[in-house]
Image (cartoon, rainbow, N blue to C red; front, side, top):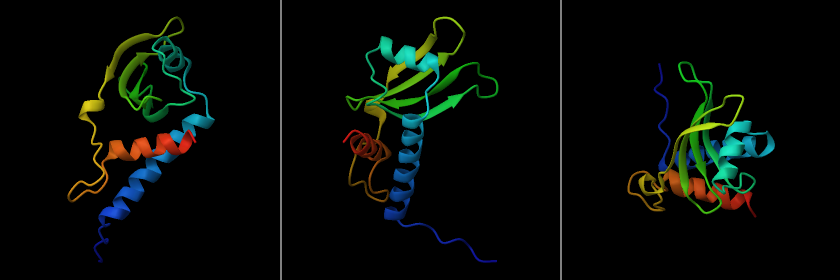
Length: 126
């Protein structure tokens, strides 16, 4: 049986970029949950100019949603929100930009995932 060929750094970066772009484009063309929309508006995050990096909704064992946004100001926000019927209850809304890999020339991995997400943000906002 043949062992699958390992992707080189450029191919790995291209795969990550494609995945980030697909997620961001999906949430640009489909409505985000109302609770996330309201929580974002309350915190001056314009979802029409931000990108959703990750969004898990009603994951087993968790009521609500959690994920990561990249704001129009290039800030990465990790969030957890209860998507109840009334006002959304925000359990976490934390700036995690400092923990993102924003490097464009990382030895062995190429472009960091944070830098790739920012590329997607710029591409979708131009």
